[in-house]
Amino acid sequence: MDTFQTAGRLPPFGRDARFGAHARPEATSTEQVLARLELLAHILDTAFVLPGTNRRVGLDAIVGLIPVVGDVVTTAISSYIVWEARRLGVPRRVIARMVANVALDGVVGAVPLVGDLFDAAFKANRRNVRLLRRHLERTGGVRPSVIDGTATRLD
View 1 (cartoon, rainbow, N blue to C red):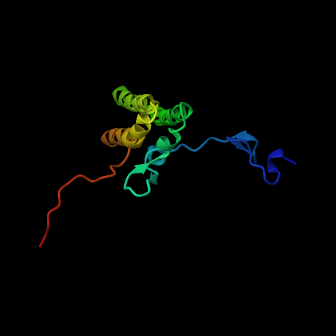
View 2: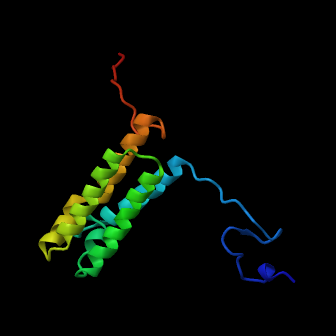
View 3: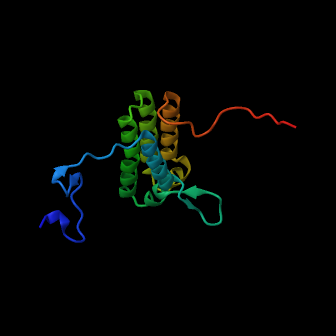
């Protein structure tokens, strides 16, 4: 009996249990990567509405309330967006802007109280995904999310 065929067990990642050979992982498209990063940015920056207000905050602001550790964790997660952008071939000037956003969010976010308010307002991850999307739309990596043009009313 094959050890990968046991009930309730999944084969190791990248391994095809039927043939015992390594299966090639499916390539993800640029649009899929961008959609995943947009979801991550939404969770980190705008996932929740503050009760009694119309302000949105995310896990970045909430986890950032934990001194030092919270800011380190959220900065590391924010760096993943920059890493994916680099992997997609984004130019260094755009990567530099993204790194500056993450660094500013991490450094100012580490300041007690003021940093927590800054985390709730700055939304570095949304900015970085917007920079990434804008670059990919300009270079033809993804389809535009907004159609530019003018409308004329026909009566």
